[in-house]
Image (cartoon, rainbow, N blue to C red):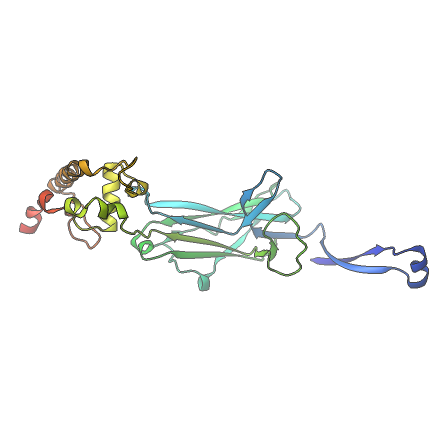
Length: 283
């Protein structure tokens, strides 16, 4: 696959006469080489510099509760010639480096992956399924390219397209692996305490926090409450917010579609805004 050639470096006519030619080995790739590698362009500058990455990080924090999944794609590129036929691509899950479970945390189809005729790149789509495990901490999925009858691997390459002369691996990245890191880790915002929100909404839980934001149209940034300046959430409207939530929770309870909190109990609000779930208790 990899071939060595020699470049002749004439030192001087006198030196040539005495010592001949000096040789230097450099690595080049023949036209028959076909190497694949993961690469995402992470940034570009006005002078044409590019930075590369082989990872994607995402948090469901702040996403609507209706958002049950998200799809990200790992970019695969080809170093080699383009051909006029499809070439299958071999990708596997690196289980030793992954903490996610297929079918629970993600879905992926490796069987249809290929670099199509006339192209020099493709993508590996992965669908991530929102679930409570992401609230316990970041989960990781690592996928790995493997060689097959069509492709070898470009195992390392520079993190940017700017040459810096380093001969070690300090500025190189692994082109064979792509890492996804997904989480949904919530913390009770300072604005919750400042506004005494527990008096109106009851004890804070991540599930209740998501429901409140979805129902009232709040974002996580709205809870950054600094003396109320520019905030969408105001102390004077807290009773209104609680009344609106109570009516919505009660409506759903009355219609047989109660809202459950994080521990599986019915979602409840503050003392003056209680939702009546007595019909479920009686049953």
